[in-house]
Length: 474
Image (cartoon, helix red, strand yellow):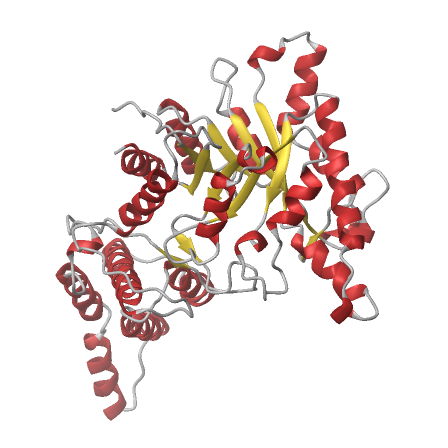
């Protein structure tokens, strides 16, 4: 066990977005984060907030960055008090910064509910968690405002500015009534090029936010592969002579995840700066240049186990005399052929996956349904052989994904201009987090206090928490 000593200008934040309060693995990760001294958490809805709330306590108050702005279903399908109608269950992601929608999001927050209940019990403010609500990607409202005008080429931003001001005014009123602590903006558009339709100028956010005392945070992505606009943005915030700018807390997201489109498109597979620990003592993926030999062994064993040679030979013999396999034998032979086909198809793709998500999507869409739909159960030996194959397959895929990522970073690609040679002794996550920390130290004037910078990292497993804390701490 080690103690986390937080750097002067940075604090690691546990990003719980998309995590669930009912997942045991996520629960262990949050508990580990709290035990190691992490006091900043990021959430994106009630489930991730509940996960954080349930596993933190008043003796160690935390700061929670909760992003609001997205919802499922058409906005018009909500009742006056925000209750969902039957039609609101449409699985479509929509966006809004309307005041009533924002208030509903805040009052549905488990942390806010807990704060209200604590106030009713007469609990003092000194032990309260700090609740920072972030307007999530308001640039979508800007784009909608622009597209709704009769002549978008002569776009007048006044309509969007009024909408943004009204949204911030709503959050300020919630601060004034002590429902939340402060607020800010979480935006991919801040770090997009000015030519991009979803670019959100920092000046727009500052000019609007400066009207409100409780506007305190900016949240945007920065990593070694998406630094062209994000890094100058961070520098401009730190070096600004304007106290409205240099007094803001900056939360840097996606330090290990790069999106070719800046994270604003649909169904784009991200590039992740991550090396993986491989099964059966094969070490970390950065140390292995080829597919692990243990995978080849597991593959050959599976191919041999399911080749059903004895049934094929029997079928040939019976065919010569006009006989047939029994129904049980026919079912076994067909099942073996199915498994051999799946195993062969997966083996051909081992070195081709560009992301772990692509591999997992193949398993979810094709492999698992095929196995579950054709087998009630397998005998113990077959189950063991197949289980070992998939274990080694996962390791081989991880090794291949990490190698492709490293090669791409070195050679350039992904429609991003970069060319970085990462030493094989350094894991990709070490490179990414240390790059961010190096720029914090180099770009910060020692004589200036400046804003604190917080690095928000997704850590759905407790071993990720320990590993990333060690990296940042060192």
